[in-house]
Image (tube, rainbow, N blue to C red; front, side):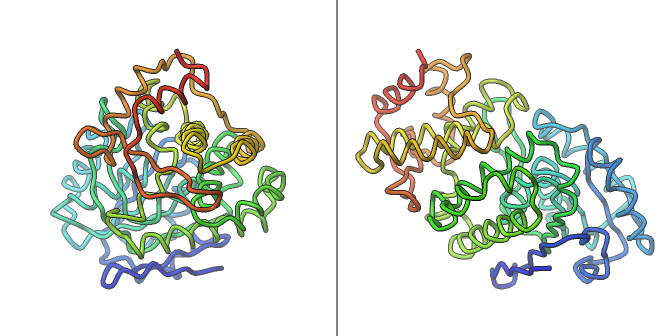
Length: 360
């Protein structure tokens, strides 16, 4: 087992990475605040891991919420279901919420914990690669709105994160690739050595080589933790973690939540952001080709969906948390392995990039 620490003063917490951790309650039971425990999971994960977790928590007063599976259910209505269960079982401020699932479950569970009685403890047990390397770390919680992704939420840190690599054995190939999009991101924005390692080891990752996956998860979490420790509330450098996300969120919103997995949309968005970076003279043709190649090697899309024309993209990109005074701001790459802070991008440059990728 590896342990990383996210140092945020009184909000500090560990990330445990290893096999067989989620049901080893002795390892993390001291993060549970009382006997009252609510497990939030979904219909896909519950048959796989819920019973073992409930059994491991046998000495606690455990209640469960099983939500529908999918990004389209990341809504205030789903969070209200969590509130309803907490109130029905009369759990108080000392209760602990455990989010057992992928990024959608983690985001909603964390948001519910942040809001219920103005804040109860919660623990992240991410069950997808994407959640283990990204969404479970850093305290971003929230839900989608029909007009924009992740536009309703709160910064709220967990008590701990339990990244059990064994649960990735039940992850389907598409979800594995989606997680690799966020792994690749860390190499592009701040860790060129890691990016080069990924270029050499992508086949091993897709083949689910245990050592390769463990290394990629630890390196990704270490990068994420360092950024969060420097800028918890995303006032500066943390925004660089959103490379490709402005384009990607527009795709998810425009096509319909769940049609493209988050990592798939981010892969496309990162290629678009790389093209804008090339237009600004920061990346070479060779750099962009490398970026496109590694996403294709990870079995991820690199071109926008046909249903999204230029105007649709621009309209949806205008609804983004990084924007200021109506200006669309993007995370771009100064060079391979180094991202720039959010900057306004001329509309004509965005149109040029979108047309380069076949949009009309």
